[in-house]
Length: 174
Image 1 (cartoon, helix red, strand yellow):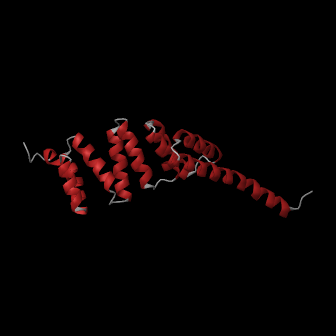
Image 2 (tube, rainbow, N blue to C red):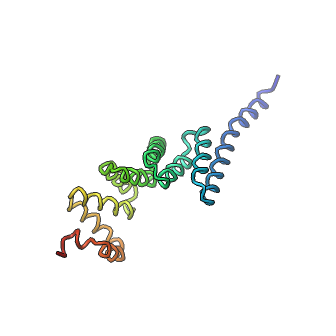
């Protein structure tokens, strides 16, 4: 018969083993990403998530890899699961917005970019993406508001936007 003290130690070891495996799979995934083996990284992250389905880092990294591999639907699943468990991560909302945008789910993308901006008001990429989508829906006032926020944040952005053709958007050129 084991004493309760050794039983407690055994329970703690059992609890740590999955975490150690989760960590090992996650680190392996990072190494595979660095070597360019994104599918191998996705597989390693799948193993980590089988052991710890709510692991935010693994969900975010796998979602980003799905997006990189042109599987935005799978990316949305991972980002959504991460957000359901850890709902205040601007990066997860932004990446899910990008995935929605790639699938043509423009209203869902605007909602995600807006959530990013409610969490991090100076997120420039979310402002750019949302402004472009507002212009797509002919919501000129909203698009201009986002473009103005960008230009006020950094004058270099105004020059870049002009180079990208915003003058046409603003209809200042024929």
